Image (spheres, rainbow, N blue to C red):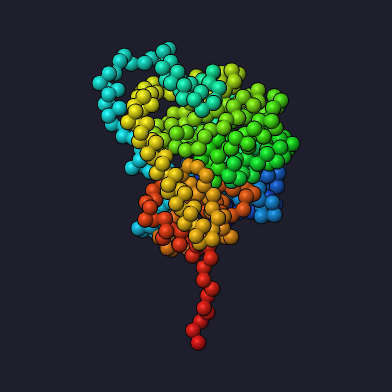
Length: 446
């Protein structure tokens, strides 16, 4: 814990508020250790039970984590509005930032012409009683999903993939329930699971998706939901293969107590076939976002699933946000219908594939084995994240430390390839090799 931040309070509510304030202001940085329960109780003059209740409340909200013998610490990405500078080492001036995990803005389709066309053909304003999923968008979405083998009967929309996953988990699970998640996996999802008070069970991942044995172990440990990334898994680039999908479907068959969630966030950018698990369980949902192919600011995802699951998500949306803007729906539909946009997305997908495979090959020339079967990220196992990230930063490259994405998986780095040019691959690979295997120190001159 920072020596400059003093925890205060005489009740559990006051103590938890003091800790949250420290996290929000940055006085308690991600990973900071908090005092042992008895030590803080003695310092504040309260009972250990009071401090324990404060810690427990913050753990349930995802702000704190128990780290075994290392005590209680602030989570790496606590779900409060805080200064984010401590999450990753900031790039040095002039450095290349490969830590962001975003598509290349240069390869996104322009929205201006489509917005102008929508404005020119704007009809009557949509009122509260008429809002919902536009029938023409629903039909277009079903056509696109069925082409990939996804059963697309019941359908609704959410404000992006993570919004859809949050609504699914909230509709089926309660705080304390266990959720099987990929390890390593999407950092935002790990944060969401913690914020909902759910218990994550890590499932190891290889290039073909979640390991069958890992999923079986999670189910045996009581997981009530399983979240699988279909393709372009973040951070490893894994994609569920046909053989892995068949094995997982066999394992999951006959599990009425399990909610299966598939996240196909990369969609058209993946460049590998989709092998969906949809329908393998009684309760299931398949979520496809438009953000990666068409632009992060387009907060729309299509969600299909069994009748009960979709009805729960639709009902919860109706009493909350209400609906996804029909203006946004018409914009997405316009993008889907434009052959020129389809061509731009295909071009972007090929470009990401070339950059990703080019970096993998360049790393292999230096004896480094990395992973990136699909998507915009490469996952490079390393011996020590901190020293390697620091060495890269000094060499002018900013990458994301794997700790943001791991539960029990070994150390690694996530490198986003979307902004790389072909001429960047060789020097980046050399810098990564140098950072991972620095030359021995020569010692002091004699």
